[in-house]
Amino acid sequence: MPTFQFEAMDATGQEIKDVIEAADENEASTTIRQMGYFVTKIQVKKGAAKLAAGQKKKRPFAMGGAKTKHICAFTRQLSILQDAGLPILRSLKILENNNKPGKLKNALMDTCDEIEAGSTLSEAMSKSPKVFSRLYVNMIKAGEAGGALETILQRLADFLESSEALKRKVKGALIYPAAVVIIAAGIICLIMIVIVPTFKKMFAEFDLTLPAPTLLLIAMSDYIVKYWFLLILIPFCYWLLTKLVRKFRQGRMGFDMYLLKLPVFGSLMEKNILARTMRTLGTLVSSGVPILEALNITRETAGNALFERIFSKVTEAIREGEVISKPMRDYSTPGFHPLAMFFWALMGTFPGVMVLSVALTAGRTAGGTKTKGSMESLLQVGALMTGLGAVFAIAFYLMKMRARVIDELVVNMVDVGEETGELDTMLYKVADTYDDEVSVMTEGLTRLIEPILIVFLGVAVGFIVISLFMPLVAMITSLA
Image 1: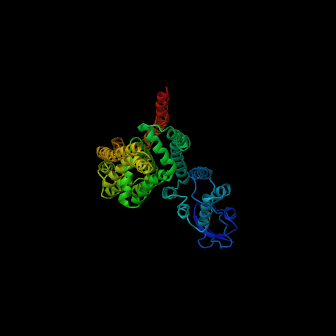
Image 2: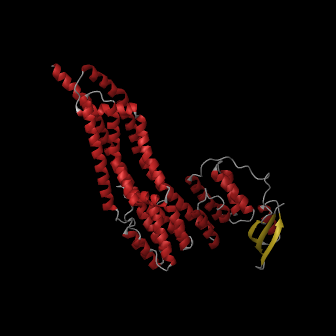
Image 3: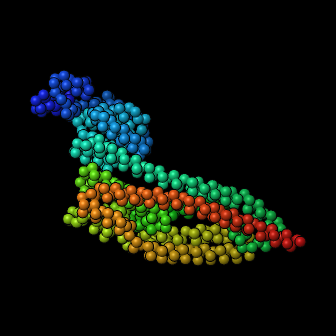
């Protein structure tokens, strides 16, 4: 039988500390109450409850990590069970039995074993970092220290649910545009592969002099048919180059600064990060986590190198006796970064590089002198597009690089929160404000993308139709 350590109070209010042997925690609690004591704390004696390897429950095989929605549901259920007064170990075992096999169930089994071995809940959860994040563990630790675990669990559940709701909203808004783009690309590729080559054969049989748009369309069709892999290879090379550069600290900083300056999407990303970080910091501060630890955790949840640098500077300033708002204002201007400019130049050259690729591959298979001349003209256009694209992209970056990523509103709200001692309340208000702005921007972006896609499809299909019918009209006119 395992040995349980317990703390209890007798009828006179004197504290009793002792050990007792029992089959499980419930039996031990019942026996202690029968002895006339009121149990305040009970746990398995350290080292006594460590199960032998053969006695441990088998862990079901699980790939990947635990889904956020499952962690949200678990946290909410655990807060309800704690509010009802159930012992933490019994609550965890109930939820473990109710969960389907997976990472979360395995983590709960490990947590129960650690608690039976004498660890606290936060210590046990810290052994499963892939399921319970540092933010999660520190809030649980604060709840244990303050004796308000059920309240902390409710706040944590609210925080996780609001974060997951915002994430679902953004993902849901992007599903429709992504589906339209994929379907449109499939239809255009089908036209290029099946229909355009048929017209090309017909034009060759009649020995027609083709106009420039038709030559361009046929060149694009040949490119897709013969060199379709380049459509995948060129974007893949851009992506691979980005991944390699981001492996370095300065490369990641430059890329993240580039992302935050993208039109529309950069602003959406910035507001989303602000909403998440301010809500995280507010939740930690209201839960009693020390401010330096709270800032370190918030920095890890930012997901952007520039914001991580800002929170690092804020932490350093607080250690030197400063307030939060001052370094937040001072370091919110990104400034110039050579790699950010490089990524902007890379983006600006992409359309020109694709045109050059079409011109080069089509020029090799060009049959006539006029066709070769048209491809050479297209090559010149591609080179011009590449150069101008890079110049305009760099100029845009230089104009935007001094724009602040943390608005004055956020700095002022934080300043007022520090002055009044209501920092957590102000942080929550900032987070709510930016959550609303993200929702409005996402909805507006979804509505804007639809007509843009329709116009793009209209232009693409119109170009194809006009390019194919121009030689036909010329042929009918000559016959008439």
